[in-house]
Length: 225
Image 1 (cartoon, rainbow, N blue to C red):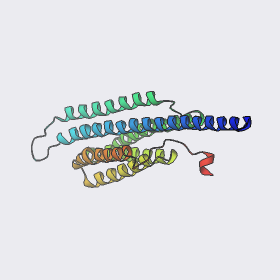
Image 2: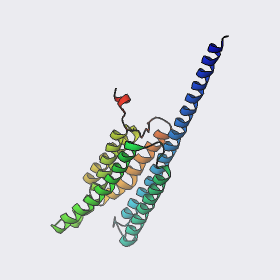
Image 3: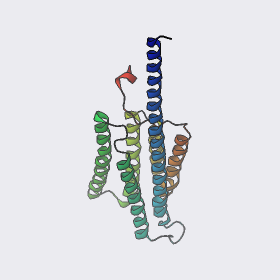
Image 4: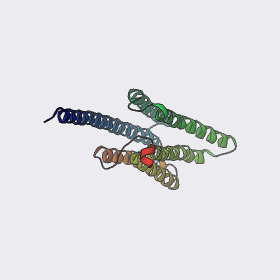
């Protein structure tokens, strides 16, 4: 074997080794993202089940409510605050995981769209209440609008990063918000306490088992080509 053949063989082996390392890193990053997103869905499923469940038990359904309304709203707020804190902590830990430049800006803008949308929705309902919206309709509109917005934002995230798991969850939440509104108060709280967490858990299981892909990557010129 000539020196040129030996050099060519060494170069090929080195290239194969580098490709193996890159592939292992990619699979490790993807596995970490899947685990993180799975736990995020589980935490939010628990928060919605506990929070909306408390609001349901505060309703006077065939007798005395199980929970006082004030206690129910405290539990609801504490549940969501815990899930938000978990989300922020998880987001900080995973910040910069293979995301740089334009993709990082893309993610930041998408994250801020959640805050802008939620604050705007709250102000919209407050404005409607000042204009004469009844408390009965407000109790339907508040959760319905917020859950609908969450679903739409998941749709946008799924389309932005080509993430089927986000897109499927967005569709499920939009369907649940629509169905709960048609069910009407106070049973809509029960729908949100059961159907929404169940949808999150199903999506989490399907994603963890690899049935639904989770690929938070923006489109690239190569992919579009």
